[in-house]
Every structure is written in C-alpha cells, then in structure tokens.
Length: 126
Image (tube, rainbow, N blue to C red):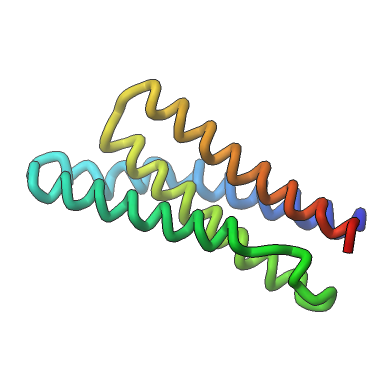
C-alpha cells in the first residue's frame, strides 16, 4: 500500500507541475480568442463541456475496480483526466481573468485531487 501511495502522490505532483509549467504556453495559445466575441462564447462553452466530460471520467473511475497488476494503467487514466482538467481550467482562468474565478478554479481542482486520494484510500477496504 505504501508504494502505491507514493506512486499516487508522485502522479498528482507531476500533473500539477506539468500544468504549472505549461501555463505560459496555454496563455499564449488562447489569448487570441478574446478578439472575436462569437468565437469567445463558443470556446468558453466548448471548454466547459470538455471539463465536464473529463470530470465525469475522473469521478467514474474507481481504483477498487482496477486489478492489482494494472495500477499503473489506473494512474495513467486518472493522471490524464486530471491533467486535462487542469489545462482547461487554466484556459478559462486566462480568458475570464477574474480573481474569484481563479480561486474557485483552484478549489475545484483541489476537490478533484482530493477525490482521487479518497478513491485511492478505498483500496484498503478491498
């Protein structure tokens, strides 16, 4: 259990590190959207829908249902979902640019990460 906990913590730290390192790149890629109001609205709606899809995938995954030999696949799946959620929150933060939205996005992402740990600890019951 200790090795899998270390791997889960490492996964979460890598995802956060990758998202932080890519923030400037993400900002440079999405700032052009603000120039076209119609595209801006469409882009915000699209990102919001993609975040919901990624969160659904993240919340529907259960470590309990993963066979012991496939834990790395579980880490990969949850890591990819969490990375996607983080990057899309970054896009929204850049586009909306309201401090309270940034704080709420961080809280939401923290909730996703805590859910991942909560689900991980359910392995003890298996």
